[in-house]
Amino acid sequence: MVAAKSMAIAKEKEIVLGETIKFTVSYDVLGHDVLDKTGIIAREPNSVGKYLVFVADIDEWCEPSTDMFHRLDPGYVSKDARDLLSRTKILEYTEV
Image 1: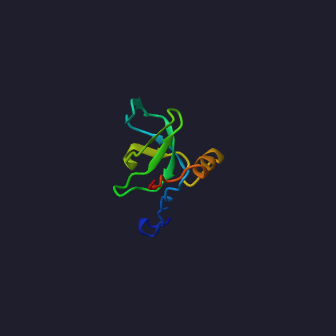
Image 2 (image 1 turned 90 degrees about the horizontal axis):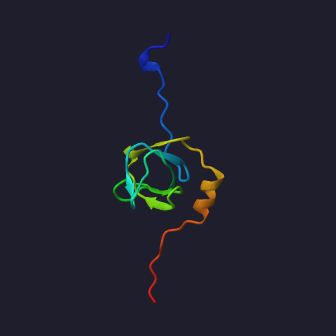
């Protein structure tokens, strides 16, 4: 038997852009409750630690805190998510 102190604890994988998440709390996004809906992590955390997430069911974007969702398959990025990310870019301000 292995002593508890010598057992290795698996470190949770870091969130990868394109991962699919599922909302675990009631959260209003422009009049839609996204509880139990899925979303795709599209951008890394902002200055307050919130990821930009696209929710396809309602065709909207949101910035939930990490305690509002769980990761369905950590580290896995679907083809649909890769396609979405390839078409997504940060808005740039240009002077006219």
